[in-house]
Length: 367
Image (cartoon, rainbow, N blue to C red; front, side, top):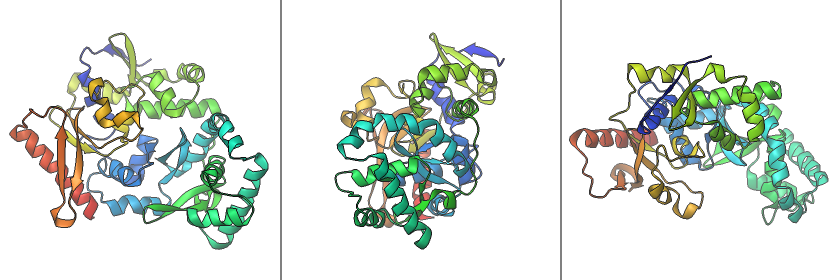
Protein backbone atom coordinates (compact mmCIF):
# COMPACT_ATOMS: atom_id res chain seq x y z
CA UNK A 1 0.00 0.00 0.00
CA UNK A 2 1.37 3.42 -0.92
CA UNK A 3 1.97 5.90 1.85
CA UNK A 4 -0.61 8.50 2.78
CA UNK A 5 -0.41 11.88 4.39
CA UNK A 6 -2.19 15.14 5.00
CA UNK A 7 -1.82 18.63 3.58
CA UNK A 8 -3.42 21.64 5.18
CA UNK A 9 -2.78 24.18 2.44
CA UNK A 10 -5.34 23.87 -0.38
CA UNK A 11 -3.10 26.03 -2.56
CA UNK A 12 -0.66 23.14 -2.80
CA UNK A 13 -3.22 21.11 -4.79
CA UNK A 14 -2.87 23.38 -7.80
CA UNK A 15 0.92 23.25 -7.79
CA UNK A 16 0.89 19.45 -7.54
CA UNK A 17 -1.56 19.34 -10.46
CA UNK A 18 0.79 21.51 -12.51
CA UNK A 19 3.40 18.78 -12.11
CA UNK A 20 1.02 15.91 -12.84
CA UNK A 21 -0.28 17.65 -15.95
CA UNK A 22 3.23 18.29 -17.33
CA UNK A 23 2.90 22.05 -16.95
CA UNK A 24 6.14 22.48 -15.05
CA UNK A 25 9.57 22.41 -16.65
CA UNK A 26 9.59 18.67 -17.37
CA UNK A 27 7.01 18.68 -20.17
CA UNK A 28 6.54 15.75 -22.54
CA UNK A 29 9.07 14.95 -25.26
CA UNK A 30 6.52 14.69 -28.07
CA UNK A 31 2.89 15.34 -28.89
CA UNK A 32 1.83 11.65 -28.89
CA UNK A 33 3.67 11.05 -25.60
CA UNK A 34 1.86 13.98 -23.99
CA UNK A 35 -1.60 12.91 -25.13
CA UNK A 36 -0.95 9.34 -24.01
CA UNK A 37 0.20 10.63 -20.61
CA UNK A 38 -2.85 12.87 -20.16
CA UNK A 39 -5.14 9.89 -21.03
CA UNK A 40 -7.79 12.17 -22.56
CA UNK A 41 -7.84 15.92 -23.22
CA UNK A 42 -10.99 17.93 -23.85
CA UNK A 43 -10.97 18.96 -27.51
CA UNK A 44 -14.36 20.29 -28.59
CA UNK A 45 -12.65 23.60 -29.42
CA UNK A 46 -9.87 22.58 -31.82
CA UNK A 47 -7.62 25.67 -31.53
CA UNK A 48 -7.85 25.44 -27.73
CA UNK A 49 -6.99 21.73 -27.83
CA UNK A 50 -3.96 22.36 -30.02
CA UNK A 51 -2.58 24.85 -27.51
CA UNK A 52 -3.48 22.59 -24.56
CA UNK A 53 -1.04 20.11 -26.05
CA UNK A 54 1.52 22.69 -27.16
CA UNK A 55 1.82 24.35 -23.77
CA UNK A 56 2.83 20.96 -22.32
CA UNK A 57 5.39 19.99 -24.99
CA UNK A 58 8.43 22.28 -24.87
CA UNK A 59 9.33 23.61 -28.30
CA UNK A 60 6.24 22.24 -30.05
CA UNK A 61 4.54 24.38 -32.67
CA UNK A 62 0.98 24.24 -33.88
CA UNK A 63 2.15 22.37 -36.98
CA UNK A 64 3.52 19.57 -34.77
CA UNK A 65 0.16 19.02 -33.06
CA UNK A 66 -1.76 19.14 -36.33
CA UNK A 67 0.71 16.69 -37.89
CA UNK A 68 0.12 14.22 -35.04
CA UNK A 69 -3.64 14.32 -35.73
CA UNK A 70 -3.09 14.06 -39.49
CA UNK A 71 -0.85 11.01 -39.07
CA UNK A 72 -3.22 9.27 -36.67
CA UNK A 73 -0.65 9.15 -33.85
CA UNK A 74 -3.22 11.22 -31.90
CA UNK A 75 -6.95 10.89 -32.47
CA UNK A 76 -9.83 13.24 -31.69
CA UNK A 77 -13.16 11.59 -31.06
CA UNK A 78 -15.98 11.20 -28.50
CA UNK A 79 -14.58 8.72 -25.91
CA UNK A 80 -16.66 10.03 -22.98
CA UNK A 81 -19.20 12.63 -21.83
CA UNK A 82 -20.41 13.00 -25.42
CA UNK A 83 -17.58 15.49 -25.91
CA UNK A 84 -14.60 15.49 -28.24
CA UNK A 85 -11.25 14.58 -26.65
CA UNK A 86 -7.72 13.89 -27.83
CA UNK A 87 -6.59 10.35 -26.99
CA UNK A 88 -3.94 7.85 -28.04
CA UNK A 89 -5.28 5.76 -30.94
CA UNK A 90 -4.81 2.40 -29.23
CA UNK A 91 -6.92 3.61 -26.26
CA UNK A 92 -10.01 4.83 -28.07
CA UNK A 93 -11.83 1.54 -28.60
CA UNK A 94 -11.60 0.32 -25.01
CA UNK A 95 -12.66 3.73 -23.74
CA UNK A 96 -15.70 3.58 -26.00
CA UNK A 97 -16.46 0.07 -24.78
CA UNK A 98 -16.62 1.47 -21.22
CA UNK A 99 -18.65 4.60 -21.88
CA UNK A 100 -20.76 4.26 -25.04
CA UNK A 101 -23.63 2.18 -23.66
CA UNK A 102 -24.42 4.55 -20.79
CA UNK A 103 -24.30 7.59 -23.07
CA UNK A 104 -26.53 5.83 -25.59
CA UNK A 105 -29.14 5.26 -22.87
CA UNK A 106 -28.93 8.89 -21.77
CA UNK A 107 -29.75 10.20 -25.26
CA UNK A 108 -32.37 7.58 -26.16
CA UNK A 109 -35.22 10.04 -25.72
CA UNK A 110 -33.53 12.51 -28.03
CA UNK A 111 -33.09 9.80 -30.64
CA UNK A 112 -36.79 9.03 -30.43
CA UNK A 113 -37.52 12.71 -31.04
CA UNK A 114 -35.22 12.63 -34.07
CA UNK A 115 -36.78 9.36 -35.27
CA UNK A 116 -33.48 7.47 -35.12
CA UNK A 117 -34.04 3.75 -34.67
CA UNK A 118 -31.32 1.09 -34.71
CA UNK A 119 -32.23 0.24 -38.31
CA UNK A 120 -31.46 3.86 -39.23
CA UNK A 121 -28.07 3.60 -37.52
CA UNK A 122 -27.24 0.44 -39.47
CA UNK A 123 -28.34 2.05 -42.73
CA UNK A 124 -26.23 5.15 -42.04
CA UNK A 125 -23.27 2.90 -41.18
CA UNK A 126 -23.54 1.06 -44.50
CA UNK A 127 -23.89 4.30 -46.46
CA UNK A 128 -20.87 5.83 -44.71
CA UNK A 129 -18.57 2.84 -45.01
CA UNK A 130 -19.47 2.25 -48.67
CA UNK A 131 -18.48 5.83 -49.46
CA UNK A 132 -15.36 6.03 -47.28
CA UNK A 133 -13.91 2.63 -48.19
CA UNK A 134 -14.32 3.51 -51.86
CA UNK A 135 -13.13 7.13 -51.85
CA UNK A 136 -11.27 7.71 -48.57
CA UNK A 137 -12.07 10.06 -45.67
CA UNK A 138 -14.91 12.48 -46.32
CA UNK A 139 -15.91 15.83 -44.84
CA UNK A 140 -18.81 16.01 -42.45
CA UNK A 141 -20.88 17.97 -44.96
CA UNK A 142 -20.00 15.43 -47.66
CA UNK A 143 -21.03 12.57 -45.40
CA UNK A 144 -24.32 14.27 -44.58
CA UNK A 145 -25.04 14.53 -48.30
CA UNK A 146 -24.48 10.78 -48.53
CA UNK A 147 -26.91 10.24 -45.65
CA UNK A 148 -29.54 12.52 -47.18
CA UNK A 149 -29.25 10.86 -50.59
CA UNK A 150 -29.58 7.44 -48.95
CA UNK A 151 -32.82 8.28 -47.17
CA UNK A 152 -31.34 9.27 -43.78
CA UNK A 153 -32.23 12.97 -43.25
CA UNK A 154 -29.64 15.08 -41.42
CA UNK A 155 -31.57 18.25 -40.57
CA UNK A 156 -32.37 19.32 -37.01
CA UNK A 157 -29.26 17.66 -35.44
CA UNK A 158 -30.24 14.28 -36.85
CA UNK A 159 -27.03 14.12 -38.88
CA UNK A 160 -24.68 14.84 -35.98
CA UNK A 161 -26.49 12.29 -33.81
CA UNK A 162 -26.08 9.65 -36.52
CA UNK A 163 -22.40 10.52 -36.87
CA UNK A 164 -21.83 10.47 -33.11
CA UNK A 165 -23.52 7.09 -32.80
CA UNK A 166 -21.40 5.58 -35.58
CA UNK A 167 -18.26 6.93 -33.90
CA UNK A 168 -19.27 5.71 -30.42
CA UNK A 169 -19.79 2.20 -31.78
CA UNK A 170 -16.38 2.11 -33.45
CA UNK A 171 -17.39 2.21 -37.11
CA UNK A 172 -16.26 5.74 -37.89
CA UNK A 173 -13.69 8.12 -36.41
CA UNK A 174 -12.61 11.70 -37.12
CA UNK A 175 -9.40 11.43 -39.13
CA UNK A 176 -7.08 13.97 -40.80
CA UNK A 177 -7.64 17.70 -40.52
CA UNK A 178 -8.99 19.89 -43.26
CA UNK A 179 -8.58 23.41 -41.96
CA UNK A 180 -10.30 23.48 -38.58
CA UNK A 181 -12.57 20.57 -39.49
CA UNK A 182 -11.80 16.87 -39.63
CA UNK A 183 -12.50 14.38 -42.35
CA UNK A 184 -14.39 11.28 -41.26
CA UNK A 185 -12.55 7.97 -41.67
CA UNK A 186 -13.38 4.29 -41.23
CA UNK A 187 -12.35 3.32 -37.69
CA UNK A 188 -10.56 0.05 -38.55
CA UNK A 189 -8.62 1.70 -41.38
CA UNK A 190 -7.59 4.78 -39.40
CA UNK A 191 -6.85 2.82 -36.20
CA UNK A 192 -5.68 -0.64 -37.31
CA UNK A 193 -4.49 -1.74 -33.84
CA UNK A 194 -6.53 -1.39 -30.66
CA UNK A 195 -6.00 -2.65 -27.13
CA UNK A 196 -8.92 -4.60 -25.66
CA UNK A 197 -8.55 -5.09 -21.88
CA UNK A 198 -11.48 -6.50 -19.92
CA UNK A 199 -13.88 -4.07 -18.31
CA UNK A 200 -12.50 -4.28 -14.76
CA UNK A 201 -8.91 -4.02 -15.99
CA UNK A 202 -9.84 -1.12 -18.26
CA UNK A 203 -11.54 0.86 -15.49
CA UNK A 204 -8.56 0.26 -13.22
CA UNK A 205 -6.12 1.47 -15.87
CA UNK A 206 -8.35 4.46 -16.63
CA UNK A 207 -8.30 5.47 -12.96
CA UNK A 208 -4.59 5.02 -12.39
CA UNK A 209 -3.74 7.02 -15.50
CA UNK A 210 -6.21 9.75 -14.54
CA UNK A 211 -4.79 10.14 -11.03
CA UNK A 212 -1.22 10.07 -12.31
CA UNK A 213 -1.91 12.75 -14.92
CA UNK A 214 -4.51 14.82 -13.03
CA UNK A 215 -3.81 14.22 -9.34
CA UNK A 216 -4.40 15.24 -6.67
CA UNK A 217 -8.01 14.37 -7.48
CA UNK A 218 -10.89 12.53 -5.85
CA UNK A 219 -12.66 9.33 -6.84
CA UNK A 220 -15.74 11.46 -7.45
CA UNK A 221 -13.71 13.67 -9.82
CA UNK A 222 -12.83 10.60 -11.88
CA UNK A 223 -16.39 9.31 -11.96
CA UNK A 224 -17.61 12.69 -13.22
CA UNK A 225 -14.75 12.95 -15.76
CA UNK A 226 -15.61 9.61 -17.35
CA UNK A 227 -19.32 9.50 -16.47
CA UNK A 228 -18.84 5.92 -15.28
CA UNK A 229 -21.19 4.85 -12.45
CA UNK A 230 -19.77 5.92 -9.09
CA UNK A 231 -20.59 2.56 -7.49
CA UNK A 232 -18.63 0.70 -10.18
CA UNK A 233 -15.77 3.19 -9.92
CA UNK A 234 -15.54 2.77 -6.14
CA UNK A 235 -15.50 -1.01 -6.45
CA UNK A 236 -12.74 -0.99 -9.07
CA UNK A 237 -10.73 1.57 -7.10
CA UNK A 238 -10.18 -0.92 -4.31
CA UNK A 239 -7.96 -2.94 -6.66
CA UNK A 240 -5.70 -0.06 -7.77
CA UNK A 241 -5.44 2.33 -4.84
CA UNK A 242 -2.22 0.65 -3.72
CA UNK A 243 -0.51 2.17 -6.77
CA UNK A 244 -1.39 5.67 -5.60
CA UNK A 245 -0.83 7.97 -2.64
CA UNK A 246 -3.67 9.38 -0.58
CA UNK A 247 -3.64 12.94 0.70
CA UNK A 248 -6.17 13.92 3.34
CA UNK A 249 -7.13 17.57 2.97
CA UNK A 250 -9.74 18.72 5.49
CA UNK A 251 -11.24 15.25 5.58
CA UNK A 252 -11.37 14.73 1.81
CA UNK A 253 -9.23 12.02 0.19
CA UNK A 254 -7.22 13.12 -2.83
CA UNK A 255 -5.15 10.65 -4.85
CA UNK A 256 -1.99 11.14 -6.90
CA UNK A 257 1.11 9.33 -8.06
CA UNK A 258 3.90 8.44 -5.59
CA UNK A 259 6.36 10.41 -7.75
CA UNK A 260 4.40 13.65 -7.49
CA UNK A 261 3.53 13.04 -3.82
CA UNK A 262 7.25 12.76 -3.02
CA UNK A 263 7.67 16.41 -3.97
CA UNK A 264 5.87 17.36 -0.77
CA UNK A 265 9.09 16.35 0.99
CA UNK A 266 11.65 17.52 -1.56
CA UNK A 267 9.90 20.70 -2.73
CA UNK A 268 6.90 21.30 -5.00
CA UNK A 269 7.80 23.46 -8.02
CA UNK A 270 5.63 26.15 -9.53
CA UNK A 271 5.50 28.61 -6.65
CA UNK A 272 6.41 31.47 -9.00
CA UNK A 273 5.03 30.01 -12.21
CA UNK A 274 2.60 31.68 -14.59
CA UNK A 275 0.77 29.89 -17.40
CA UNK A 276 -1.54 31.04 -20.15
CA UNK A 277 -3.90 28.10 -20.61
CA UNK A 278 -6.54 27.70 -23.31
CA UNK A 279 -10.26 27.54 -22.75
CA UNK A 280 -11.50 24.06 -21.78
CA UNK A 281 -8.07 23.12 -20.42
CA UNK A 282 -7.88 19.97 -18.30
CA UNK A 283 -6.26 21.96 -15.47
CA UNK A 284 -9.61 23.65 -14.87
CA UNK A 285 -12.16 21.42 -16.56
CA UNK A 286 -10.89 17.97 -15.57
CA UNK A 287 -12.54 17.87 -12.12
CA UNK A 288 -16.08 18.07 -10.81
CA UNK A 289 -14.83 20.22 -7.91
CA UNK A 290 -12.73 23.09 -9.26
CA UNK A 291 -12.53 25.11 -6.06
CA UNK A 292 -8.96 24.01 -5.20
CA UNK A 293 -7.68 26.10 -8.14
CA UNK A 294 -10.59 28.46 -8.86
CA UNK A 295 -12.31 30.52 -6.19
CA UNK A 296 -16.10 30.01 -6.36
CA UNK A 297 -16.72 33.75 -6.68
CA UNK A 298 -14.67 33.76 -9.91
CA UNK A 299 -16.28 30.71 -11.51
CA UNK A 300 -18.78 32.79 -13.48
CA UNK A 301 -15.88 34.76 -14.98
CA UNK A 302 -14.47 31.54 -16.45
CA UNK A 303 -17.78 29.96 -17.51
CA UNK A 304 -20.13 32.95 -17.89
CA UNK A 305 -23.64 32.07 -16.83
CA UNK A 306 -22.68 28.41 -16.60
CA UNK A 307 -23.00 28.17 -20.39
CA UNK A 308 -20.40 25.41 -20.69
CA UNK A 309 -17.93 27.58 -22.61
CA UNK A 310 -14.65 27.86 -20.68
CA UNK A 311 -12.54 30.98 -21.18
CA UNK A 312 -8.75 31.08 -21.44
CA UNK A 313 -7.17 31.30 -17.99
CA UNK A 314 -4.14 32.90 -16.39
CA UNK A 315 -2.77 30.47 -13.80
CA UNK A 316 -0.25 31.74 -11.24
CA UNK A 317 1.34 29.33 -8.78
CA UNK A 318 -1.37 26.78 -9.51
CA UNK A 319 -4.33 29.13 -9.03
CA UNK A 320 -6.56 30.69 -11.65
CA UNK A 321 -6.12 34.46 -11.24
CA UNK A 322 -7.65 35.82 -14.44
CA UNK A 323 -8.47 35.39 -18.10
CA UNK A 324 -6.68 36.42 -21.26
CA UNK A 325 -7.28 37.06 -24.93
CA UNK A 326 -5.26 37.44 -28.09
CA UNK A 327 -5.67 40.83 -29.70
CA UNK A 328 -4.45 41.77 -33.15
CA UNK A 329 -2.94 39.57 -35.84
CA UNK A 330 0.44 38.84 -37.31
CA UNK A 331 3.31 40.92 -35.96
CA UNK A 332 0.88 43.14 -34.03
CA UNK A 333 -0.70 40.24 -32.11
CA UNK A 334 -0.48 40.55 -28.34
CA UNK A 335 -1.69 38.64 -25.29
CA UNK A 336 -3.91 40.81 -23.09
CA UNK A 337 -4.59 39.51 -19.56
CA UNK A 338 -7.52 40.50 -17.38
CA UNK A 339 -6.92 39.74 -13.73
CA UNK A 340 -9.72 39.10 -11.26
CA UNK A 341 -8.12 41.62 -8.88
CA UNK A 342 -7.79 44.72 -11.02
CA UNK A 343 -5.83 46.51 -8.30
CA UNK A 344 -3.15 43.83 -8.25
CA UNK A 345 0.13 44.98 -9.73
CA UNK A 346 2.51 42.40 -11.15
CA UNK A 347 5.97 42.46 -9.69
CA UNK A 348 9.04 42.30 -11.96
CA UNK A 349 9.33 38.49 -11.72
CA UNK A 350 5.65 37.92 -12.46
CA UNK A 351 5.72 40.39 -15.35
CA UNK A 352 8.74 38.59 -16.81
CA UNK A 353 6.92 35.25 -16.46
CA UNK A 354 3.87 36.70 -18.24
CA UNK A 355 6.07 38.00 -21.04
CA UNK A 356 7.70 34.58 -21.46
CA UNK A 357 4.34 32.81 -21.49
CA UNK A 358 2.94 35.21 -24.09
CA UNK A 359 6.03 34.81 -26.27
CA UNK A 360 5.74 31.03 -26.04
CA UNK A 361 2.11 31.16 -27.21
CA UNK A 362 2.84 33.49 -30.13
CA UNK A 363 5.79 31.31 -31.16
CA UNK A 364 3.54 28.24 -31.02
CA UNK A 365 1.05 29.86 -33.39
CA UNK A 366 3.81 30.80 -35.82
CA UNK A 367 5.56 27.41 -36.04
